[in-house]
Length: 455
Image 1 (cartoon, rainbow, N blue to C red):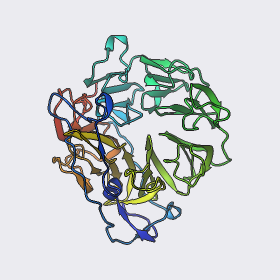
Image 2 (cartoon, rainbow, N blue to C red):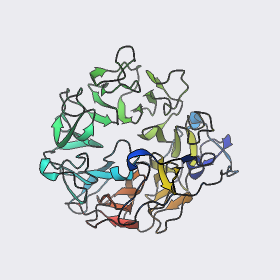
Image 3 (spheres, helix red, strand yellow):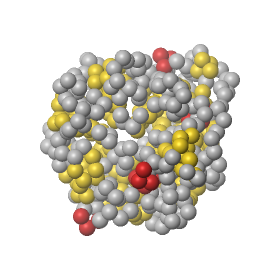
């Protein structure tokens, strides 16, 4: 489907791969502790090789790109609906991890059309929700989350059911009660009023309740309230967030900042700065305020990084990738180049890989769903996570071949990618060291799409 009209252009366009390689990829001495810096050391040999430092890319020299205020131009495409062709049938797809920074934390969950939820991948913190008998074993065999029924919305390892109850499992600030940070292998119900939506991050949780927003958890980044009211340390109970008046809330997305998307395409943000996506003198900024990007239809965020779709164009921003650059070299939304108008985009956090005692920061990577239903990926591909059958770094958008139906959603983690298709099936590719491909196979690297074996 074409644009209704092209976004106005003013500044040089920046390919998504260029954003991924802002300046020179940083090389940092020494390994990180506890093996976290080795993003994939595995007995099966599927560890991502440490990349060589990449030269600084230059602008593609194309037409000038749009400033955020140019977004919101009419665009005649939206994510395609899922039409179940057989059972089981998935309706939504999420990642299990809210930090997204370690290969060993990779996993996915899907909301099925019967209101149940299935998960696969790593389980060291109970992310699969299989109860005490499920242990901590990773699994490439998707299975039902214990006790979840009539679910209608899913965010990481939290679900909202038809009655508005919020049920969560795994590790986070939102389990058992909003003031208790516990690990739960069996879903627990939060003691909150009925909710329309829920969103969670590594530090906090928020829910849309009675048309407003309540947040709870740690206040490290000012996502629960002003620092003089809610101490940064400790777990704060749910409190209403004071929002400026505006259109009804369509979505909530949490990383280190909270993003609230309204029906009119405007976005409010508060929390860490970056990825606040707006000018602020506060670090963090606990005051919800509108970002410049308008006409937004989709948001994704993980820790310090975020992306959005507005007017069929993708925009990404986040923390600096090179210590030699100012903090805001990626602080504000920058338009990215894709082969066609897009309807959805997914981002990851940078990961640190080691080789010979040196640590190298591998930039974030991205995948997007085009208006045609095709999927494109950019960035790191050492584990085949781009999906083109190679393991070559993708500086430009690479189309994922071999998908049997158009895509509805794409979700990314550092070393794997999964997509939900219009027929309700899910396909994944990349490393399978923790079973994150859901194909009932043990370990291995699969650089082309594999169908997830839903129960």
